[in-house]
Picture (cartoon, one colour):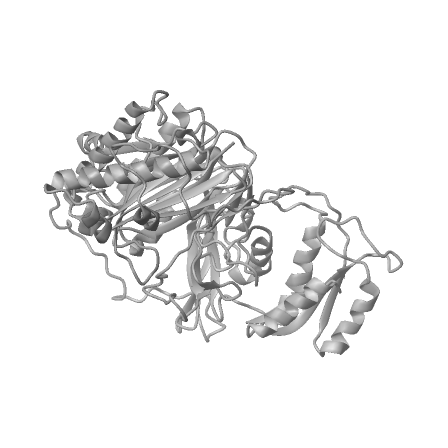
Length: 601
């Protein structure tokens, strides 16, 4: 792209220009804002650095590109995070400056070459229906660039910020459309991001190439009105009745961990693929039920730290996002929207509908989020309505990371990452411990089980048990445990009857989890999440697997005089179907993998 560089003289603006050239863009102009009085070095500004402005005039000769400068006449009148057009604000000086640069160097553009288009719908922060509908896209470009800088909006409107109507373009060889009058229809009077559309009332065609002709009669035979009824469609397929809704709600299943201040709520649908009405409907159902559970606990979406969004088909990612933003919004999350990972799982094959949600909830509002949508060279911008990272009580939960090159937002084509139908093959979800002013005691390499009697169901420690356990204990506050059960392990636990074998495997998993927690002075009440990943090759129904794990936990609870698992009405674990799992990408032979995250308050 041909770009204009905003320069202050500081190292950051110069470094950005260097990175801009590195990634193939061409700087064709410089722009700078300076004080009205040359003798003033620094202004009390929320936006601009002015110290050293006297030197900036030399940049043009140094770089051999034109420099555009404007005196800052406005002041910091609008000091809130979400900027709105404010007369005499210093941001308006930037708008005037960029408008003049664009007027003199029209090649500075990323939109609409040879196209005259106007805004006919706006639905984003900073866009006002009464002010911006009907405005030419070329006229709006500097303002859209400003919104991109302020809020990370997509300049081209790809995020649904606005829609356009083309009035003229090179394809219109005979005439152009002239809009004479229109009305503004307000759909949503939201104070932050109002939604409005333009309703044309009077327009005419203007002939091209003949200055004496201001209008054009409609050519006969070019417009055809199609009438008649559509194909016969059963009413049941066009409109969901209350019975269908109730049937869907009857399929809802929940789980919740027992930790009081940080816990997980999971919601999924159980039933055959025929009972699923589609991703949109299934996701609406699980999000509605999750929201209901939050409200019952006295919480809301603002208390959610992280969301695992599992869908059955990643090609429907846009549908999932569109449904997701109806529930999780910036308005509902004033402290920042939750971080999120979105992956495709074999939900339909496992009989779990087409959408599955797991949320991590905190009972306070002390979280801090990183939510940046602008393109940078240090971290990928958000490709959905989520925060890149959420920090809460020393634990940093990062959004699912793809192999994206941050400056270009293109998928890298080396290693395990490759482009596949606009999706990545791998997504990594990091969790970091970032407690400040604390020495970390890393107990990862404890190779021997501690002494003590943790036996239950007759199990006694054996050397090969250690091959099934991976754990990491950090600073005595975090304990992450992964139990891996391969086909080989199942053979060692072999029972003559299949049902007994499944029960023995689940008991063995619970035994190892309980043993690891006890050895490291953690309890089940410290559990924030417990996922049990199972391979679809196991050939066992979700209901059957769920029941045997639930029975194993009940039996463990009965063996403890204090009821260590707790008395929650909901199960404390959730089942996650996978195509494969393992300790490395080369050995995805796990049948069952238990992933336990414990956090001591």
